[in-house]
Image (cartoon, rainbow, N blue to C red; front, top):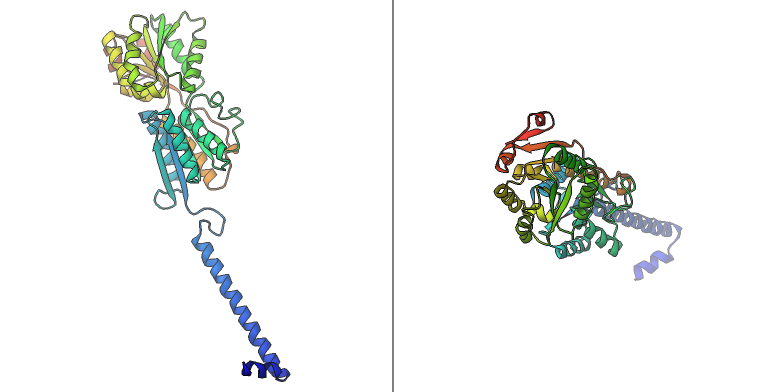
Length: 354
């Protein structure tokens, strides 16, 4: 203390020295403080350009079956090809509801609570649950949907060209798929009644059945319906249509497609031609379908997601999209097992698989 008092009482030279010493000390503190801030920034979630170095993407898939699985893989492929590598700058949280309507809401709430950067909702029930969870929490989490039959009717978006602020994606219903299928049945078969099996708890299925009935107008065809609530109901529903339905038409109902082999077995035993709503079902044993590659559909959704995760675009910048490249595919083996004789004119209309 005596030393400091002498410095303070000293002459101008001493006082100037003291002020200089204090100034240098303050400057040193500021420099060290600045270095600490720089180090914190380099260790944080954001780089110098403001872009996140790593992201977490949640996947809410309604049920496991080939079409939805292909869409998920297509989504992942698009992210990988756009700079997001799992284990490096990308983490996935993947949950499958196994067609349980209660599970999808639990999964959706969990994803929001985990503050993920984006949610990929695969199928209509998952998309509805994810959007509801985000809205209820008032969370700013983008929701990208795919495999949704009617995004507008499901209440996800106002219109295909008017997505929501935090939601957009891809529909798995090509506008011509159902009309083309009904036209083929009406003109290329002797069928009078089309058997429809679906879960009325799935909004996407209700929308498709309405489209089927509208497409039947003026064709002479009529519908015979059987409803299911779970995959365990599917075989009995198919059997209940025997004697009424001349053909089966299995739309893209997640519950029924998950138990497709049950319908195929009945169709083979009773010689009932079976049409499907997507191409994976043809590979599994349905006779024919107008469809497209679900992997491509998921990929298109993944391209949207990559641009959003990079901060280049917002969900509202992307119009919801329909699938491309619709084609008719016929399974020769399935046709034979269902008592159908292939017509020569089909050669110019369809692709064949064995």
